[in-house]
Length: 394
Image 1: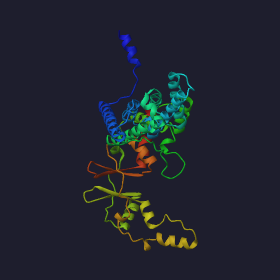
Image 2: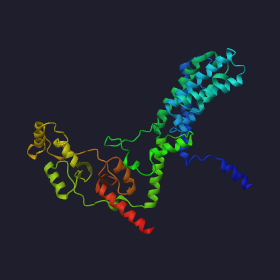
Image 3: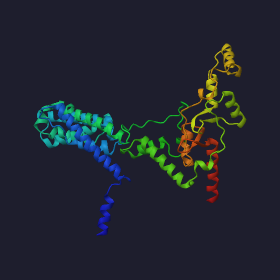
Image 4: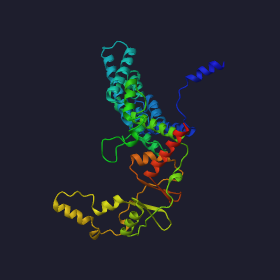
């Protein structure tokens, strides 16, 4: 008996560790999506022999609300897959009515097969599309009389309405939809991949493996690469222990205030041989950061002299005697400063500093009061030290 139960348990698909809260969210989404779509479709169609809802929309609802990150649940897959399949199903039905096909059963099979081929070709593969094609052939007199308009009314209308509901519901409940993965680009506007993507599993590795498999997996290559990268990071956390930012940060931090004169801030940076000053208010809360780059941009040092005359102007702008109108730190600082918590693990700094180009990160408590600062040098030293410890232990 136990072996039989074990056999059936082995057949259960592994959907991952989904919480009860997520399951309830998906179920409620399907309820709301189908109900609102049905009510709006009824109001739009008015008195009609056509059904307000067709059965395949139930399968579309599962994808939209239970699997919103699925490639087959994206807007083009929903609209394109359902409408194209309905058009193909109607076309096959016409062939049957004209006597070019002899029986309903082969007509239904042909409609489903051609619908899948069209969805492959148009890159809008959507599993319920096969059922929509069958519905166009087998749906009965009302659907058959509607002809090609069935693809737009009610199939297209219902699909569009459910998409609108799914967009609102998923985003309001914390699920990004549409799930369009933006390819991360270098902050330096170059073609090089991000630093964190140059080692380990790269996007090219993922693409090559997927090509070798020659099979569709319901996850985009970008999402798959991101999940692999996060798994690598999780394994790194496990191997590297629990070294936190407050273990490596500098606590005696040189700071500036918003009202500090620029000359004083520059002198403080030079005196401490640092490249950035957190800017704090009277309560020691971080309100910005001023860096060497801020000084250079403000002074006009970023301008490229294009002639001898331009070079003279460039030098004059860069001299302290002709410093621009701004006189205090708050006029040149970066107010939208990214801060981190002292409890954050060191390894979580890697993508922030490597990919986003952050060289200095103020460390703040829960009330945004400054407790330290962590730099790329601190991170490199920590990772190098940890590497030495791991190597010696091995």
